[in-house]
Length: 133
Image (cartoon, rainbow, N blue to C red; front, side, top):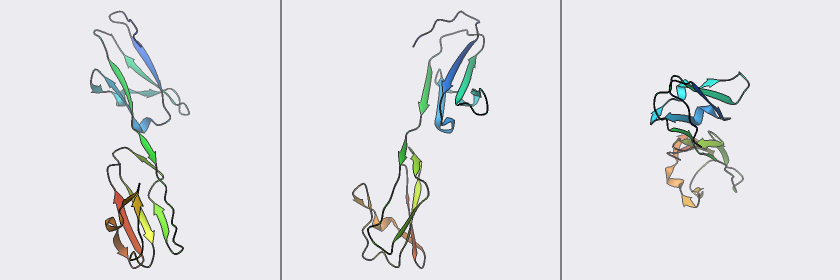
């Protein structure tokens, strides 16, 4: 969308997002996210103000992708705990298994065997970190 604004005018851009922590506002290739002002404590609307417009502005809104993470065990004596059920692109999360042994367990991440990624952290607990999701 293009909008014509006269020189020296002030322009307010309203951005709606439910996840401001993972949203960036880029103005002419400069991150201006910290310049966003929330309209009210309970609103999902934020204002970005350009004072005294003196040149063209190219504004981009970037939202980081997030992925749902789930796990299930088909083995009775294995308990799986995830550090999060929602992981953002580039982030990491941990998987913790409570079981007596990994000897007869096969652990997959989207079909890939990741069993060797687990390290013993106590007598019956193993942990792996999936990095850079």
